[in-house]
Length: 301
Image (cartoon, rainbow, N blue to C red):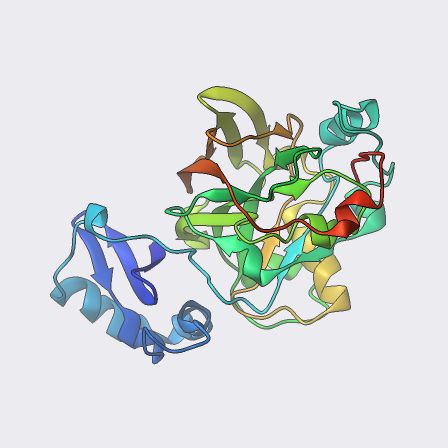
């Protein structure tokens, strides 16, 4: 099943006939703030059976082309991201790629970080670059793993029970030595979408292929079988530290091929069995601060 957020607060299922609005099943009004409707829908999903089946069979569908897609989850409890989770990406960053030096720690040794919820954007939004002319801003193609139920201390062998679904995710980053969370948390630096594909439609979590192009030229391509910390172990590691909540998003880490984007570029991410997003890159007016001038060397962390 493909679940979407659309038109600023509405929730829907994408069917062959179009979008069926199921906002009411979350018991959260479309205009409620904060926009937690999808989080509530995920939390209640297991008990929706009859109501969801009735909605899908009796409600009229609207063509997908007539709705504006939002980030599937607009207000998660947290976004958890795993750095340095592909060997080839670690090697390219050690080598510089025009960006400096990366820590030699792999995700299995350095753990994860949190990315600001306010960096989330959707498939209809542009990637907005801050006006930092002396910095490279890179794309990072990743799989977004959506948590379906509350859990702490989850064993890797039980992790599938906690995966609600998957979405496409981009982890944009300003290269430098400042704190990683700051460099990765500008507004629009975490595009997600175009929807959540529920886990039952993904037969093999260890064989999900993804790729990214910039202006039609492929830059990144990888498969989840090559992850250093796989999906099961990401959930185990994160839940060893904190309680995972319905709607939490885990970003898998990026494969090799990261590189800079600039105003006017078009970035497209495609994940087999999940979907694709085609996002324009524009230049914004906000983001300058003296902190960006504190370090002269542009090192990639």
